[in-house]
Amino acid sequence: KAGVTQTPRYLIKTRGQQVTLSCSPISGHRSVSWYQQTPGQGLQFLFEYFSETQRNKGNFPGRFSGRQFSNSRSEMNVSTLELGDSALYLCASSSPTGTDTQYFGPGTRLTVL
Amino acid sequence: GQQLNQSPQSMFIQEGEDVSMNCTSSSIFNTWLWYKQDPGEGPVLLIALYKAGELTSNGRLTAQFGITRKDSFLNISASIPSDVGIYFCAGHRAQKLVFGQGTRLTINP
Picture 1 (tube, chains in turn red, brown):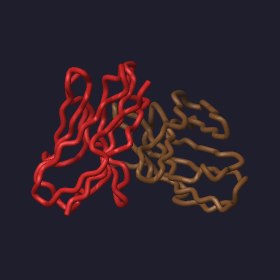
Picture 2 (picture 1 turned 135 degrees about the horizontal axis):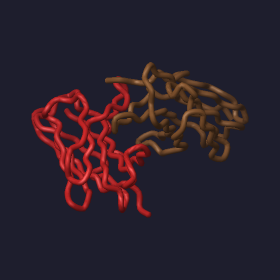
Picture 3 (picture 1 turned 135 degrees about the vertical axis):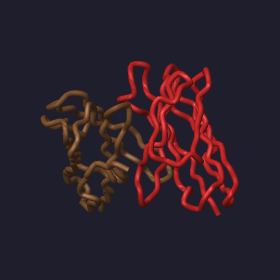
Picture 4 (picture 1 turned 45 degrees about the vertical axis):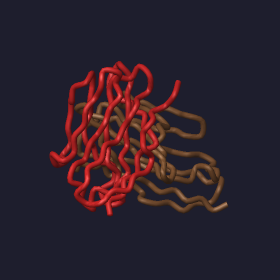
């Protein structure tokens, strides 16, 4: 079975721009979670989608949003980028039985200049 | 955001040595997970623990779910060079994963 895939792997943007990241979960997985990883804050939960509905949300500003499609693929969007948004953005999917065990993709490295 | 207390933050060991790291929390978790992350990659699941007191092995790795459900440890026996990386614990509760700050393992050959 193919793992979680994320595109693009690397992205460079400037302040004020917006960005969309994509995640394709493991086949059959319906839950997708997004995390931000920075050296200072570690791994921080952004939000989780299940069956096209946002089921859970972390403590991030409204500039961070996401959605999930009927095929379980998910996108996250960050608007009005700030320098502090530079991070590795990780997507994880989990099995149909729940969200306990999450499998991560390789991440998208976003650099904001 | 909420984090688990993971220790040690870094370890420098000789190849062949055993390694031990742990995570503690003031909160109860339903599941404990251990991941390894290599530079520029996403975390890879090593071991998942679902019951308090559970002891699980995966090759040279052994992890335990603390009986109080507030802690977990990971042991690596007879370390080899490919064990180098950052190890994260994660606790699952209320449909969220909460992560420790990671243990960076460096191995001298």
